[in-house]
Image (cartoon, rainbow, N blue to C red; front, side, top):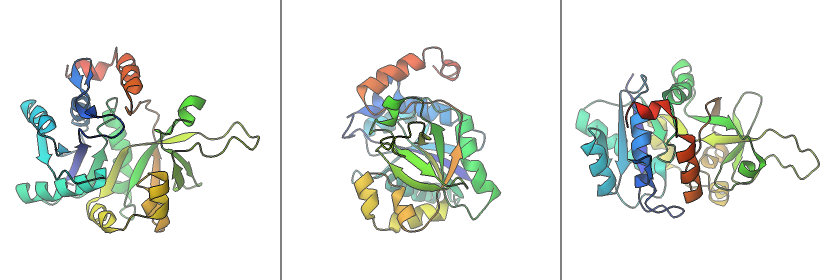
Amino acid sequence: MNIIGIIPARMASSRFPNKPMKLIHGIPMVGHCFFRSKMSTLLSEVYVATCDEEVYDYIVAKGGKSVMTANTHERASDRAAEAILKIEQETGKKVDIVVMIQGDEPMIVPSMIDEAVKPLLENPNIKITNLVADIETIEEFEDPNEVKVVMDNKMNAIYFSREPIPSRRKGVLDVPMKKQVCIIPFQRDFLLEYNDMEQTPLEIIESVDMMRLLENGIPVKMVPTQVKTKAVDTLEDLLLVEKLMQDDKLMQSYS
């Protein structure tokens, strides 16, 4: 199958401007995401989709592949969809699965991509998956930058929120604390279908794209990962990740 990784990246982040090119141990964050994603044996190729020449030029200079996209996209999925259509036109080969890899996950390891894609390979009725990981501290549970998720007994998402869910305010303190990890494989045609859907009220309220699917009755299969990573949303996150990656063995292979 033709499985393509897409890393959407833009410099005009409202929460952390110029984030993709922020250095972690001397390497731009988007570089970490790219080099580590390339190590997945399931991916036919990895592209960085961007509207910024600085990001594009960096990836190409490192021997990677990048796609220039419109600067009007508000959502990563829109950018990924435009990139896939351009890649198909350029290569003459249709993509089967698109793995959208957020550019603010510099600690990604290849096995996470493999874990996320596996259910789509085993069951063609699954259109999309999200990785899910444990939240280990109350501080992280209450951080609005972390997207929390609750699931049913079949590991389908029930609800996503930036608020701490389920609630600890009713007297039960030992609640399942889970977070979305933004490695999101789509069946190719479903990505385009998703982008044609109108935004939904809860998607806007929660500022979580996956709510659009839940509000339309479309299941989102959650795939557990034991890999411990940290997304970068703030300068404080960047400093923490730099510390966490101090002795990172994967980084040593491309630094």
